[in-house]
Image (cartoon, rainbow, N blue to C red; front, side, top):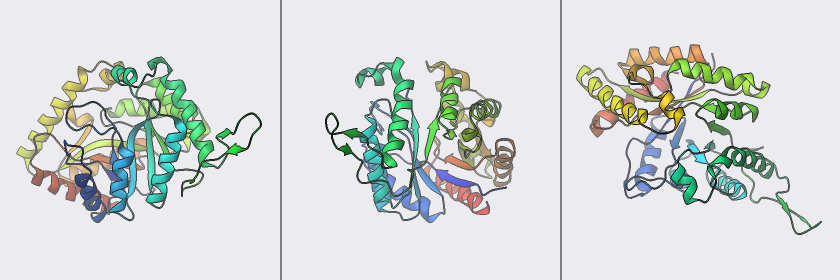
Length: 317
């Protein structure tokens, strides 16, 4: 069985939007031996919005040397694809080829309204953006200077060729199939139970040979402890998150939400979590586990101890 790569998302947030805490956590993740560090994208929250994760990852890049730098869902439909290609190429240069770009469409109606993007166009815009970005990173012309004029090329090109890895964060059958048709890995969310993941990966692989050859990255909340009372508090906090997701408007989120924390999170002792990871590897062919280690209502010291235990699991392979 091939190596399993462990990534991690931030376990502390700065509600003011500062990058210092993120950069420090990136340093800590690298020191603990994690493969990658992942930032989400979110907009318009009064506290804790992260609308430009690439800028924050640039700060992490400056404080690390080997850590891969990822986005869990960089929203393409609200951005011009050439600008995305440029910004990603610059970050790949700054980090000496460490970018993994997780990309998504978005689902919030207020987001599309704010950026003057018709929500019905998001899937088409997403597919067109991916194709244009890939051409730009390969050094193909992105435009021409007037009718019959000189070709315009992206500069600088990314370190990674033919471009940084693209992983597609997808909810729902149509989005999963689109990822497969594009021949890109499907980045599974942390809220989908195993039976739904199996269904999604079968759907993803059914549409193209390229999809069948993709890596298998999955996000999961992971918390390791031998303290039964602490594990009960963690499960209670995660159940509250699931209840909030169950009330979410998008059908795909409602379908995925479950009140059974054990179906979507890896919470338990070192041995229990190791066994759960082994089952995911066997059933899905898991290649990358992106661990969400922060849990609402849990003391920072307890989160830090769990983080260190997850790092031990990562070192054990």
